[in-house]
Image (tube, rainbow, N blue to C red; front, side):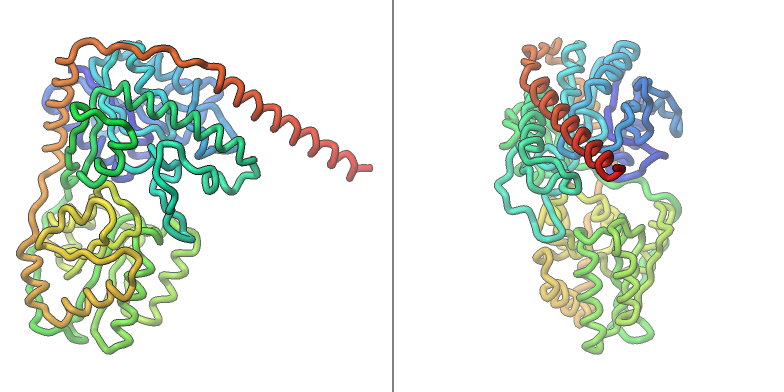
Length: 455
């Protein structure tokens, strides 16, 4: 089977959870004897939009370079030049089936283009990008409370740019139409969790026969995992309760709540320390973390790699992933389970589905509830040990790769894909013409102001 994976970026340029998942799935499928090519977005640009082919750990990777633009607008995700480049790659590669993992850094209408060229596709939903160009329906000044729909709000996307609301609204209306069209054409809608399916499937109009829930599974952890040390009967200055978090450090993942809860416990006389592994991505978060060093024992391991995961088992008694986001899956929860580490997770999104008796669930963004849960386990190390013993080992990501092959076979058994009816181009052309006129008016006024200042 000739398989094409389409994803928004790929190692070594960028390594995130989705990119790692696609990389491992593609290798599993290639090892099973299938011809696999990864087509990826890239941050590199090219005025001619020429794809560039590379090899990444044995996989062929074709990166689609976009036309250089000074602004990358979250609200406008349609790129006709990239779609033209995609057509050229598909014509050359001639895949039998495609798996589209994202639109970001690529273009909406990817699934439609594949269908027009006779290639049936599965469409995965790794986050909430289908309904929110900011990916997670979350703002630092509060959780998004607007009713969810395929048409995002014009209030918070591209808010750093002085574009009028009519422009963002038009971008979003067109974006919603293209995503709905891609979803209708896709043979399968794939979700990593029931929670994510329940959020998105009604909005996408998913038909029952389209829907599949396929858990990602745990990504390979390199190295030898050391034995898990026994917990003390009581925590002390010599042996404190060790809390841990690993992955990208962002405020919305619950980092401030974790540090504040731990600091309050230390102030109350409890022996608690926190280890953080990963880079602080939010502006100012690194400085905020440093401030907490005066309030509790804290170590921040900035140069975190997957090779360090095996050693985390001996350094963490309780993992804390109390995200404020509607997580679609959370690889870190699986990694903790693989390492036999009990977890605290928030009540939002998919992690709560998987903790079972190996973890506990706390309300998101509630420092008091998090503090109380940690205190309870601090005071009863036997309960914490029982949680660790009850952790269920997750399946490897290879299982998802094998299950996806079955999905592709079913897609091909459905026969040739019917191309969708042509889309009326006039609304987009008219909207883009209005945007171009608005830019020209702005440029004209800027030149007049410059010339007036020069006189």
